[in-house]
Image (tube, rainbow over all chains, first blue to last red; front, side):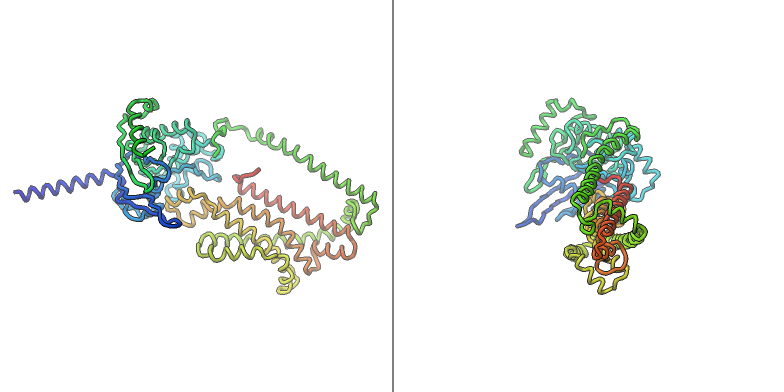
Length: 272
Length: 272
């Protein structure tokens, strides 16, 4: 009797683990990254462990040099970790996956393509059905308020509009994950805030797992489900903070005591 | 990039834009044209006033006279020089562009071939012309090869620089989509390189005419270089000047043709 019980327990345990696995989108295990530099090596990432849920909005927050961009590049398989591994949907990633969309600090739109063709670039490279892709591109551009600008050249658009187009490009092949490397850092404060809420609106329509790198504390709190605070030398996770503010997030939340409490707590943790 | 461009303005009709652009352009052209005409008048006047002998420095009127007397002959020689220039230029494009692709494609060749090319670039091509004549004789081919040698380096350097000048973020973007080498070249590297290639082509085309003339100087019985050499040794200086004028005009026209092709193929290139 005792034996069957323990077997049952084991079975239950196994099932639990299984459900836990299927609920997580990204698992980062014992990740280390060292760079060889002149006169030795720099530890860019040390002992990073993180599990990110499906459709979760994660902000990687920290000062420059804390390895947050390195972590993002490892997740997107652009660079290899020195040790440890990254699993996406329970599979270890070794080469870049088409299930990822990336947005950089600069929009990096190609000047010889109009906005529509820029958005379609991933679809072309991945050899998707272009008719469907074009439909989706139009729909995405409409969603971010760029309807009517499809045939315009990128340099005719403002920085904020270019970045909106870059977000559409990251979404056109319908990846389940969006990796954003300080996407709004080059924009002025007002455009930055506007695009933040825009992103939340998009995330509401198109459920994605988002990893959003930033060094802006209010931005991280306002957008994310969880803020992963990182600290430099060596780059490591210093604290993971669950942001329990209701959704949809609004501009006014920035002035609530809860928001300020989060902000103070995080500032304290990353030693700012 | 251009954060504050008024991108939301209604699309202005093209005609209006062009009026705005051409208006100042015509006005900009007036001062240099007037200066040029003034210099011609000054030249003519000083030749007459100081009674400078025709064989020493012919006046514009003397040069015009030489055109009237030997127009037909000059035309034939111009075509020969033009032919040598164009064939040599085309040949250098046909060799330089594939070589640039190979250099950028293969890291090994980049490290082995490219430094050698850069070193060879400093060999004075003018000094090689007599050797070429020695090796392959005084036919058209030796002139074509001088043109080829002189055009080759600016094009290969421009193309190699251009193909390798893709922004790191753009490379990350297409690597994250697992683009093939072929896709990278066709969709990204070539368009990126186009403005650089045209910088090389514009330098090359002005040098090309010089190359043909040098080839003709070394040993030839036809072409504008031959005319200059012969007529100046016979003190028929107005004819030498007429040939010089034709060479200049040819050079300028070829340059503008290349620039015109650039405007069509590379409308996104930065211009001042």
